[in-house]
Length: 186
Image 1 (tube, rainbow, N blue to C red):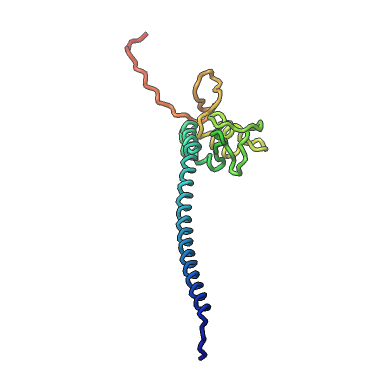
Image 2: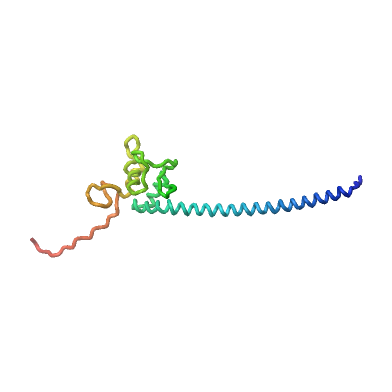
């Protein structure tokens, strides 16, 4: 074995380099810990942002959509389920609700105008104008025709929802039986 003769300058430089290396390793570990802490903080902030985004979506879109389902249909859960198979609703910058198909295109009437998010607009889109190019109503129009309250003129001059031939079924209250007073002949 050969013994090395070490120069004091080299020994000093080696000690200084080892010290610098130890400091750099310590700084590396501290930075690595800081990066892990920031990544965890980022994940927590992303979760909070997603929760806030979902709460805003619920307030602007989901709750009004559920209320509309309750307003336009006697069976809102079925109506909502069928609606979401074909359409989605989103709010624009002003908070106005707009109906889109599943491809993201705005839902349009037969006149090419955007469908308004109202009972009449939904009836027009889903039950009365949902006609294929062949002139036959598609299956979803038949479904929506049955699960929606009619939203249009009834032709009777009376206000309220249509029924029977004028539109889908509506809850009817049973009429109270007439009370007959007097049993005499006339």
